[in-house]
Image (cartoon, rainbow, N blue to C red; front, side, top):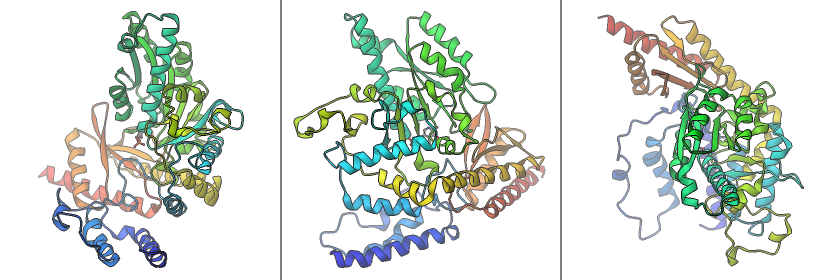
Length: 480
Ligand SMILES: *Cc1c(COP(=O)(O)O)cnc(C)c1O
C-alpha cells in the first residue's frame, strides 16, 4: 500500500468506523457465536501471496463482526464502561503514525514530556494534592500505565523493595528472602481480583480486610488485623484501598485508613479504576478526601473519561520510590540528559520497556471536550443510573442491593438467589441487553452499569421494560 492508496483507504475506513458507531444500536449487543467459530471462517495459514485490501475489508463483516461484543452499544450494561471518543481515536491514528517507543526522554522527548504535563493537567482536574504533581520542581508525578492491574503490581513491588531496604538499613544481617517471607499486604475483601493477583505475582501474603455493611473497609477493621499480624511477627507493608469497588462501587474509608497506614509506615495505594474519573466533578471530589495520606493513586481514564483503552493514570508522591526500585542502566539506553535531573525516563516507572505515545489521546480529548463537557458526561451517566434505580425501587418485586453513587446500579429480585440467576440467564440469552452479575454478602446480584457514550434515557427505559417483562414471565412460569 502506498501513500496514495493509504489516503483513499484511510477515508474509507473512517467512514466505516463512523457508520459503525452511528448505527451500533442496530447490532445485537452480544454475539451468537459458539467457541471456535472463527477458525473455520479463515484459512489455516497466512497467505503466501498478498491479498487485496477489498478482500480484507470484506471479511470484517463476515469474520469479525459476528463475534464482537459491542461495548459501545447503548444496550451494553456489563462490567464497567470502556471509554471511546472520536478525538481519542484520531489521536491513536497519530500515535500509530509517529510509532515511537518512549522508554526514555531521548527516545522521543515529546512522548515523555507531553505525558508528564498531561498527568499534571489531569491531577489538577482531580484536585490532587501538589505532592502528586511533577510541575518543574516536584518530587512526585504521574505516568500512564496500561492497566490498573499493572499500577497495583508496580506499586506493590516498589513498596516491597522500599521496606526491604528500610529494614536492612537497621539490620544488615537480615536477608531479603527472610524479610519478604514475613511481609503482609492488605486490601478490601471487595478489592478487584487484580489486587490479589499482584500479591501472588509479588510473592507476598495478601490479606483481605472484612468490609462493613456498605462494603467499605473501616479503620478499626484494619487496626484489628494489624495488631494480630504484628503480634505473630509479620511485617505489614502495603495497603491497597479501593474507591469504587468493581462489585458495587463502594468506597473504602481512606480518611480513617490513611493515618493508620502512615503511622505504621505502610505504603497506601488507592485503586479508583472506575470511580476516579468522577472526581473531576466537585460533587464527587469529597470521596477522594484522604488522598493526602496515600503514596500512590491510580484510575483508568480508559474506563470513564472518553479516552480509548489503554490509558491508566498513576501518580506517586515520591517518584524516587518507583524509579529507585527497579533501575537498570544498560549502555544502549543511556543518553546525555539523564543525569541532569530535568528529564523523566519512564522505563523506570513500569514493567515493560516499550511504551506508546498514549498521552496524545489525553491531549486531544482534554482540549476538544474541555473540563466542563467531561464533567457533563460523568453527570449524564450518573443521572441515567439514578433513573434506572428509580424504576427498580418502584417495582415491589425487586430490591436495590447497594447505594447508587455513580453509574452502577446493583439490584435483584427479592427472594432466593435462583430467581435472580434465572432472570440474568434470560436477559443474556435474549441478547437485547447485556449485564453481568456479582455476589454481595452472599446474595446473587445483577449489575446495571451505564457504559456507552451513546446511552440515552430512552435506552435505559427500554432496558428496564425488557427486564421487567422477562421477570414477569419468569415469575408467572413459577406460579404454574
Ligand atoms: C476495572 C478495575 C480494575 C482492573 O482494571 P484494568 O485496568 O483492566 O487492570 C481494577 N480495579 C478496579 C476497582 C476496577 O474496577
